[in-house]
Amino acid sequence: MLVPIPAAVTDKSPPESPHTMDADALQKLIHLLQATDDPLIQEQALITLSNSAAFSVNQDIIRNLDGLSVIGGMLSDCVPKVTEKALNALNNLSMNIKNQEEIQVYIEQVCKNVESAPLNSDLQLAGLRLLTNMSVTSDYHHKMIKQIPCLLRVLSEGSERTQIQVLKVLVNLSANPAVTRHFLRAQMPSLLLLFDNCMNKDILLRALVFAANLKKNVNNEGGSMIQDQYSEDSVFSILCRDSTAFAQKLASLWHHPDPEVKEQVVRILTQ
Image (tube, rainbow, N blue to C red; front, side):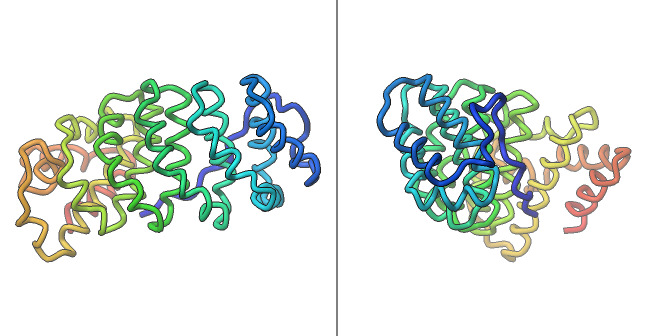
């Protein structure tokens, strides 16, 4: 199950109406980004480009003006606010398949941004939103595999808002059988805490979809994954290896009032 590409991220108070900008105006903004070292000017230019990229016609124009490489080059900027605004711009631009083909070269850097950013920060969330868009199809999943331990750590330690965004990425990745083994080997001792009746419904539902995707992929492999070696705190041991604790969690969730939650519980139990 893949989550749909989310709505465009729009910064407040853009310098000018972005949907009315023509190619000349967008080119001037891109040239300005290349010409200035002033982080305040960079921020404002990126905000305007980000807002204009919420409109599909501008997404193609910015790509044709080589704006993707200019914005992508700012992901390693030492000023966090500049990096955040660059991620927001690429997030909006990534709602275009041709743009994704160019943005994918920056996935490794985006993963580094997510890992190094302060927990629950706007910078970390901006990176997670871009990874969500870039993981809607399986084309670039292989570029995110090494980030799985980091994503699980952020899921374990993050706020509710951060957990929801991480789970959007994890649901996308877990739908791909080629990624399953990497998830099963990863460790997350606190994973069971997500499967609780008191948990935020958006978190609970996505955690159940994540678990259901993994169990489906394990079953479809005909037992070959079960023969691998897994540690006690691995995702496999918690979700797939006759886990009494997980079974008890599912039994409790059987009485959850939300029908979508019940649907995913049934999906897990019947696989």
